[in-house]
Every structure is written in structure tokens, then in C-alpha cells.
Image (tube, rainbow, N blue to C red; front, side, top):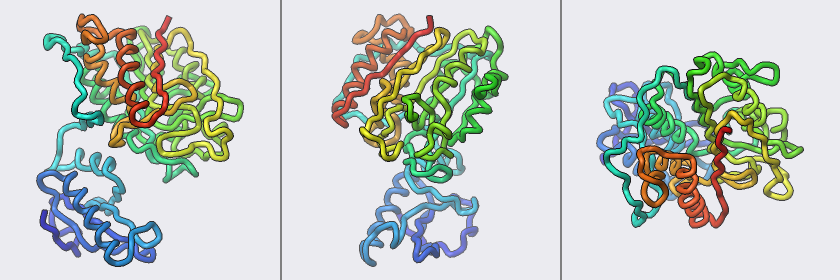
Length: 377
């Protein structure tokens, strides 16, 4: 990689990245590079060089300086981590990359018996099917005292790709929202006065399969009730700022669909991979009560009520989402877990998740995580 100085941000239409340092609040650029070949590798090298620079001049810390990336010709948009940068390069030319793939987190020696090649595990395109996909990652910008969920937006992108390729959902029938506020959640799912939000408006009555995927924080209220945490919430007032999980279930159950499936890459313990969501909680894991699931809904959650939703070791995906996608693409129907009939049943998926998510959460983090699957009845 050749390092190039840039004083004029608009000298080329090519996409460039710039590592900058904050010096007494004044942002000063000191090097950049044309993104060629593997832009993510370029990113890593630039960040390494930035950290090396700070080591030479006196040490790298938040008050002294900060290594960050900026993009040319886009109001110097800031990208502070690799996940954000990957999202950037997936939207730009001439360095446009393929749609994001699930990044492997397990050791390379892991192996699963492949399913039969004749099985596609893909539904035919269905003009009636609807998906709502929410990736709540950035809690620092609008929220207060709540840590970010690093893989949430990438999880949403991966699920969107899976929805289009494997569930047969047309892209124009997908509501995809990153960093949803409480008002956004109410617009989509309704509130305590009406269930007729955007999800209701998009559904074809009696004909639509509706899928709701949420990646982000969940948290307990003071009385043990569970909440989805919008990105504009405050840690001390989740019971006021959060979106009640029982309200989500209640409103979705009132929509006349062919089927409704809720997939939650979230936990409701008050803690997370990134740190505590609820401050001053005692004990660390608050006792969240089970939320009653209406008979009409299929609900698949990353863990039981008081467990953490773990991330893969590289922090690019939730451990649950990573294995859910693999399982639904056919691994769960393989001979180790299923009957190889070309379809993934809920019992096959449960067996697969028990053998993967539960194992890797224990191996990586020495914690319990048991995926919960509730089937409509």
C-alpha cells in the first residue's frame, strides 16, 4: 500500500479514505490512501499506521487523539469502525463489492456434513410476503448511557439478503430500517392505541407471510417486563423510552396474515456483549419475566429471557443470527439434525441451534445461551 498525502479533498472522483487525528478539538488530516484492491485491508493498515503515529508522539488515547476514517465528496462522513466501513464500501463505485456475507467466526477445523446438493432451501418469489428488518446499532448518537451493538446493522443486511434469496421476499416488500427510534417502531408496529402501522398497511390480508427481524438491545423494565430498546432511549428510563415486547406481540397478532414469524437477535437481561444496558442494576442480570406469546405467532429468540445474546468472536454477527442463517439455508436439514427432505422444520432448527449456538457461547464466553423457538398453534 502506498501512502499519499491529501490536502485537497476533491482532487479525484475516486473513493479515498483518510485517517485523521483530533488535536485539541481541531481535526487535522495527516495521511490518506486511494482505495484499491482490498479496501478493508487498506483500512486496517491505515488504522495501524495511525496508532503507530500516536505511539511515537506520545500515546494514543481518547483525550489526546482519535483514529477515524473519512470519505471524500460526502461531507467527510465519519466511519469509526470496520463494520461501518464495510457498509460504506458496499455502496460505492468503482470499488463496489459483493453483498455482505456472513463472516465465519468458528475455528477452521469445524465441519458439518453437507446437505444434498439437489436441495435449494429457497422459496419461490412471493409477491405477498413482507419483511420488516431493523438493525439498531448506534446508541451513542441519540441515546444516553447505552453501548452500541456492533454487529446489528450487518446482521440486518445479512438477513435482508437471506430474505430475498431464501424466503422469496421481493426487495420492494422489505421495510429495512437502521437505528430505529421509538417513534419509528410505533410507525411500523403501531402503539397501545392501534396496531395499524406500516406493517399492517403492507400486508395482504390472509395471504402474506410476515417476517419481523430485530437486531439490537433489549432490556427489562422495573417490574420485569421486556422492552426493545430504541436508539434514542435513556438507560435509566427504559420503561418510558422502550417499546414493550408484549405490545409488539399483541399488535402483530392482530394483523391478518397467512403466517407471522418474529426473529429477535436480542436479549432482555439488562446486559450485553458491549456492557450493561441498565445502569445500577442489582443483580447484574435483572429478573425479566417471560412474555406471553400469542398463539398466532412463530417466535425465535437468541436466548432465554435472562441470558445474553452473544456475538461471534470477530463481532461481525450475532452468534444467533450467524447460525440461524446457516441452519435455514440447509445445515439444519443435514443428517446430523434432520431428515434431508429439502425443508428445515422448527424441530430440526432447534436441534441445530442447540448444537451450535449453545456450544459456541459456552466455548467463547463460558455462558449459557439457549435459542428459544415457539411455534404458532
